[in-house]
Length: 429
Image (cartoon, rainbow, N blue to C red; front, top):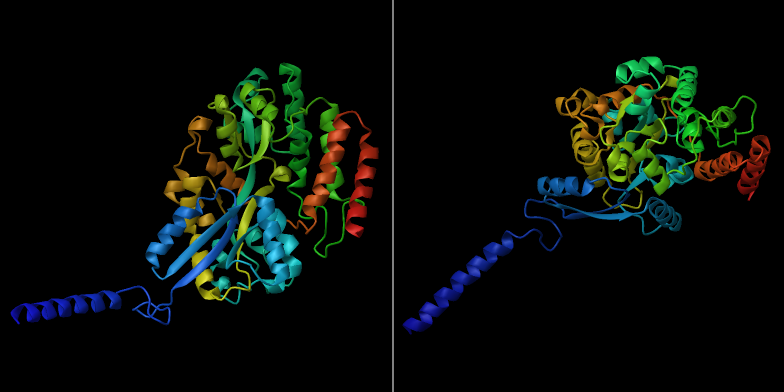
């Protein structure tokens, strides 16, 4: 009998412990935690190497009822898959990144996204660069498609040994003063060609983008009308600039992102790159032998455009808009933009970061210890709002083809005319 009583007592203790453990588990039958918070899983679609995975882990630790599942795809696949899901009305994630050049493609599907102004986004509007924020608004400013993440302010990456050989200054502030206008840029390019025999820039695309990226309206106006062939349109001026610089022997023939281009950076085959802040990472990975041979200066205002950057949106299909918004707001906060900059080189769109000691004091060993981020911070605050248009990429590719053909010996005006014909035919389909 004593054994039986002991056994019953032991079983009773185990039962009590089991019940206590169950009462301490994450959810009850209603899917809620014991503290009353609902367990929520958010699907987050994104592209590129953002490093957001580490920030997600941090957020999940701070918010134990939130689980965030990340799906990363190539840029084109990501946007195509998102567009398909939104069009079908099912299968969209709770949170989705939108690349700047792709943003306008989704404007016609505005009703498939949560208006972030309805979630309280106006309260944080002042924390971000005006131009970056306004790009994500609709025409009347009453709808916000996404919250700002990184940006791509451009700078002048210049080769120290080539500038020195040409008798030009090499200190970043002196180079910024020397090349303060488009005419200054051309004059410096001519001098470099005369003294060293080397072209100023690597490619027609790089030269074309110098002026293109700074245009507030390029291929389309805000109503979606094709502007490229209108009198006085800045695109033709950018095209003519690239043609003119090429005819003067100031443009190289290195296809962007090619192995030949990377070797050209390594070997010092051309004097400058007009690259965005994120371009530093590409150089470090693809041109290691050029370490210590480049510095960065500001570009003329006419060339101080933005190249790249993203937004984080919330598709309307989500059942957890409030939780999704709280996470996105946290992810792109100035404090976390600083972390993204330090860990993955994403350049902040929140200007408060530019005054943070950890930002200002960072140095780039690849660029001889220069604090290159302060140069890009200056450029970021000179940029204006730019409208791309939903067919931006398609049109852009046709103009680049015309430039490549022109450099190969084709007549530039004929190539321009033929490109316009191809573009018009595409848009009329």
